[in-house]
Length: 270
Image (cartoon, rainbow, N blue to C red; front, side, top):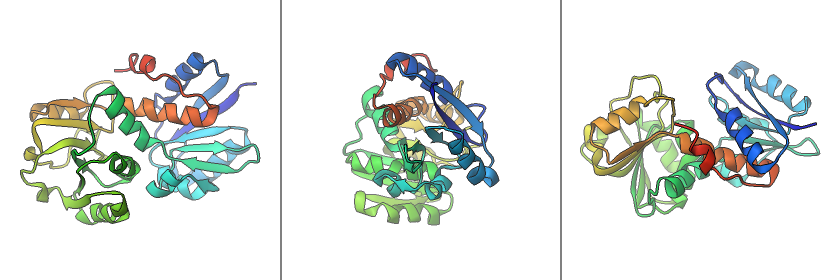
């Protein structure tokens, strides 16, 4: 019998995780089954525990459940504890549930290894202060940028993140309106409006001639943020496909003890 794994979220029909993990399993010779489960927030606790009882060995967790999952597992790794969010759950042989967060390492690996973006000493702007931003800020700060600025429509949420991660490096908060004409080396879109087509009022001045833009969202066609970034003169603009694959590879390694080569999988995605 193959070990069972899966991804939970709401909605989940768009998820490419089953395809990615099937490619990883084929590449590494691992016998696994990987399924997608649509679980509304109100049913998370009961349905999650039912899946564990049904024999699943691990689960990936996507929006909107990452923060709630941190409260449902028995233990969290230091990086999941720091982020206050869990995107990877491992079910131990004793039934204990361990939570991890591979989002940050997924992003930094994509930037460094796949896109050749140097984070060290960079001035980084993160647009949005929700769970997506919280999951990646620790890894970004640990990579040694000059600073990370978190901007949000309501500055209070950005200030909460700046205070939470102030021990890790230079980080500050502001509202979108306060950004003015300040340009950045790397601009990361972590807003929930990534795929809706309606972007928040980002000032044009944040993009300079050498600015790299990165959207944590991804789609089969150009995302609204990537389109906006290119129209405003960004040097390059990337979707979050690479982060998706790299964080999945880290989860696969946690579960199976072998890290797949992400390059063949990335070549098969947009």
